[in-house]
Length: 390
Image (cartoon, rainbow, N blue to C red; front, side, top):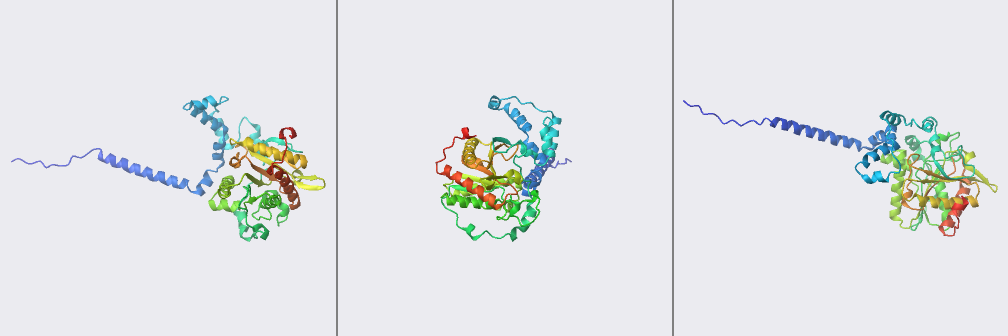
């Protein structure tokens, strides 16, 4: 008797492996998507990507040079355009700099980390003002605690009625404030406020007041001006951003204004310095003025045009109001934002008006002086040879 063999399906020995590979693929895909979703959260970005170690990596000149050197092996043009050879540091040197922020071959980097405010001394003085030296250089305010600052936001009074009038539709000047929280101690209600706490969201106490003064003076001179009064801390907080995103936020504000005001030519970012009154005040013909200075960012192609604009205004100020200007300071990406949104126009400037201890009268006197000089440039009647006067 012959037995019939049953036809059994032939097992594929690779079938189980294929299922494992597919399972692993989906697992890795899920992990990848989950990681991307976590990275996209504003909270995670603020807590991780703004760590000092990350900042050190992204701002490191050595890291930049290493990347450029590596890229030049594939892109010959980069090697041709390099003006100097790049010395690649050792791994230990690089790791030490990234973790500590200190450059082993630069003593000043140790002082920058040890002495508060010392990093401001790396600013390049392009045109010095009367009394400007190593002891009177600009001082950057420490970033405020936005959560604490915004606690009293709802209790802040509304703007005076005269400040709520309609903005012009044909404005040619845009006044705004990337650091709207910068305040003046004499204008704040509290007594004995520490210099480091001179921040406020009240437009009667902070730099918004100076912007309003300047806008009124421009309008008196027949210069149609748009003034942005955005509460920057609140806007940043609503986006989940930090204080160092302020120029990114003001960039959005500029773009919005430009889209509705096609005649805008001049962009003025108004700040205040954190130096004391002895550095930021000058008496001219019996009147006290809050001294001002210009900041020009070097990290964009047209910065020389912005610099020319600042030099013309600075020269006229020095001539008409001797001692009112502290000069012009150039900043790159290593000691500041580097651009300050000045790439939007050849006539974009950043001015620092007064310091933490200047009062309303001193600020008003300076605003009037600046408006008088600005009008000459605006009307095309300014005949100043910046090279000779500086």
